[in-house]
Length: 430
Image 1 (tube, rainbow, N blue to C red):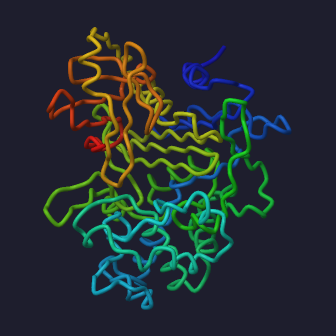
Image 2: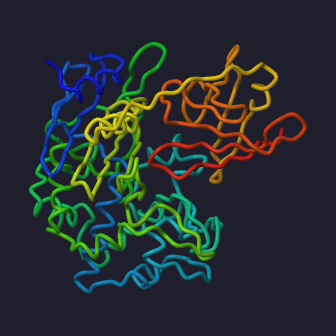
Image 3: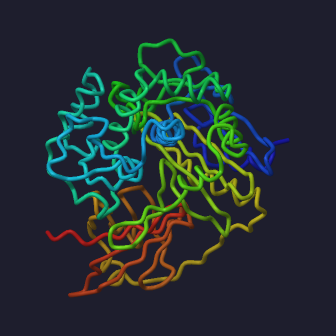
């Protein structure tokens, strides 16, 4: 008989013979579920298991941040050290950028993964991490250090180089020797393409014709921002080690879980390698990741000693939605129900358009016959709950609110997604 968690996951996996997920759930400090769903390798028909190794993508950042805190603990750096204290050749152009600002995405340095040539060119290049600096170090900053928050992979790339400079060893070796080995995370690795890694999952993309192998990426490019790999079993060990303070004491962890404060006094829900939020009153420390062929999420409800880790080898699988559904189950929350209202087409058309979020990514709203639909950053049908608010039919916890009507159209929208700060976007002027 399938458990409730089994049923939740299977409802979200379109094809049990396609790529899938590994899932681990901890409740009250005890592992209550660990299972694989779908296929780790389609060509060999190999199923996903709890010991299947996935690319973690940006979940890597919490390990990089922990490495920095271990070096601070050893007295080898200070978080208010400037970047040039440890990388004196880096051109800061008369700005002072601190290690803290690299950790919490407030450095203003241009993120190399946001460059126009990243996917088609940069991601495939064979180069050492130090050589990648040339792609972004001389670009104009996005803002003055500390003035704003903007998610930034370049900052974590630089943190990896700082770790290597101070430790006198490679980033990979430092993570293995100081985190993975002490915690018996024996199935966690730096995910080199050429290395033989037992139980490694293949990454896939879904097309109209079926599944295809994900595009190639040289794993020296994501580096300290996204090149580690692990299993859900090892992530359970990681969560337990943080709870029991095996690597970092509680005070140090709380510093990592403190929202960043910007120069104007406002805060953003991100600390050092961890997102910070709450879900239905439960304090949540989390991070997701996306890399060619993979989608990942880890949610740690630290006051409840609960953790959910979901690793997928198909980036189209909504790992956050699965996480939320499992969270509602383990915390005995009722399912969220909604009833849409009816709006005429003239009212719907006020919302149609392309809106731009800070960081220059689009939110695209179209009319699909007699209803609205999102086309970016996700595919979803939108159902109205009022004249200015809609929810996604595929995930009714996702909401879009429209405002600032002028000349018959809305000029701003706010995308509300659980686990995240609301995204505000402004209509693109044609």
